[in-house]
Image 1 (spheres, rainbow, N blue to C red):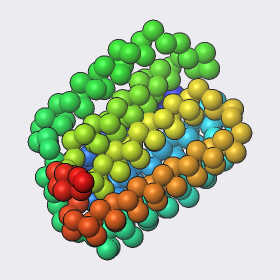
Image 2: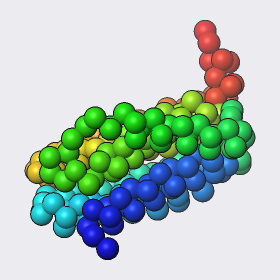
Image 3: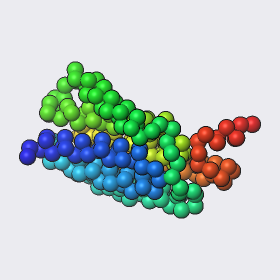
Length: 215
């Protein structure tokens, strides 16, 4: 199995785990699935580092493991202990979500077709998947009624952008990765605090009830 093929396989797993995060009914399940996905992202960084000879990506993988596999899911699970953890049906049915996801992936592959990756042309599918991953994050945000599930949409977008950066700027120093990861952690903390305030006010995580906050 060649290095590029292994990276592509890991990237494919990112798409699959993204869909599992989106279609999971309970936010706690999404948190565990996001942790699993982030572990796949860490493995992708390691495989990319070996393939491209970029030691920086090994350091990226350590930072991503701490922040994405451990801290972000931990923050979400801790927040869920004090809020309603019941399942909330999404605004869009699961079959329709899957169909939209397939279209998104196909569009992403078409969008990167003219792009050339000078470091390794065989990794173009990974670039398409990183774009698709970002768009799936947007899909998660617009398709969910549960506000916490929408935060996972942001996290999926961030993982997609992270993979794109690893492909195009893999020689960037680890301080860049640490800065991105830290920014992501603080963004999640701020969003969780806002959701807790909303929950204390309305006693619900259903986004359709936010109209009660008008005025």
